[in-house]
Amino acid sequence: MSKIATLTIDGKSYEFPVVVGTENEVAIDIKSLRGVTGGVTTLDPGYKNTGSCESAITFLNGEEGILRYRGYSIEELAEKADFLEVAYLLIFGELPTKEQLDKFHNDIKAQSQVDEDIKKILDGFPKAAHPMGVMSALTSALIAFNPTSVNVDSEEEMYQAIVRIMGKFPVLTAWTYRKRAGLPLDYGDDSLGYVDNFLKMMFKKPNGEYTSNKTVVNALDKLLILHADHEQNCSTSTVRMVGSSHAGLFASLSAGINALWGPLHGGANQAVIEMLEAIKSDGGDTHKFMNKAKDKEDPFRLMGFGHRVYKNFDPRAKIIKKSADDVLSALGVQDPILDIAKGLEKEALEDSYFVDRKLYPNVDFYSGIIYRAMGIPVEMFTPMFSLGRLPGWIAQWREMRLKKEPIGRPRQVYIGENLRSFKPVDKR
Ligand code: CMC
Image 1 (cartoon, helix red, strand yellow):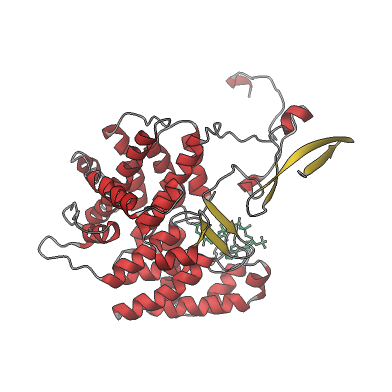
Image 2 (cartoon, rainbow, N blue to C red; image 1 turned 30 degrees about the vertical axis):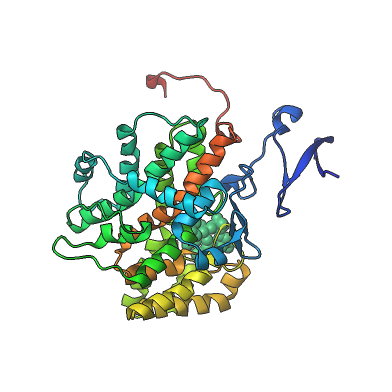
């Protein structure tokens, strides 16, 4: 029997249907609330309790530390799948057959050229510009070179738009890095896999050969998988929101990149390394920084700790922590900030402030240490996150458009002045 929720306002009762998801998540469907009550709305800053959509892409249970893409556990995907397979799974709903995967990869490769004029736009940026700002601008600029908007009623057109951005985005990411590093721009090598090719585009020196390192390729593949989707987080909700106005895919993605940039979201991976470096150069006293994080008068937060949804270990952090150990030892890198990170984690997990608030390491706590061991500079950490998140954003945009969701437009509770009369400037 279907469940009903009853709401009483001023002695009057209203009934609302209760929606139950496939993992027994329960939500009160308040679509009719304003209509039946004559204008009552809900108030939920930060959308802590608001479901913005029904989605079949990613399931996450923050209390139990579960994350699944299309029903597959993140642990299994990180161990057995590669990034392109996961991208296909997220976007189209099923793991690809060998033929589908080859076609997907070939179609992406066929779209991996970027108009040469994009280089002029890139040249307009100072070298010191933050790569996330550059990438957002370049992604947006792609619209000018691909001006026809996608007909979302045509699966083929939708598919073409998807492979176009999957092909061009790694090029834009690598170019953003190379411009900062003063290296000539490179188009990579179509004979390589998606991730290997990206690494070549990043690191090939103009006067030397690029040799692929299996440990690095596998580690990056895994990191990208772990970042590939996380249901209705800030950047994904932004992509869906912008796309809900029927702005195009590239415009929606560009907005998502900006949302991801913030230090409370994807920007945390850069902030974590900067924090660990600061602790190191301050003498390594983790306790001092723990106290700062707990001090309500101090704006400092322990970056890479806490999560809006996880009130248990972030399952991605567990995988990444192990991977950090494996990658650093395979590459023979000894990074003192890994020890600082482990020390901080241990202290936090035993500290009542963090225990009571259920603050655990999140995906960003150890990822930067791996990126650093791979030779990726700290300002490129958040762009790396966006490269991983790209298929998730695409999948969520596609789902939203296919379901013909209405334009996103939250309500508010107005708390400003009541009606008053205008006074001419000489009377104020
Ligand atoms: N250090 C110290 N205290 C914290 C931290 C932290 N990292 N995170 C949360 N708290 C405290 C917070 O002060 C509050 O305390 P009180 O109840 O006494 O006021 C309580 O814990 C709840 O925090 P909140 O800010 O209300 O929780 P939220 O769900 O709004 O924020 C968060 C989640 C991720 C923004 C926050 O935990 C944070 O700022 N963490 C550090 C930044 C970070 O690592 N972000 C990456 C998130 S995971 C990847 C991603 O989303 O891209």
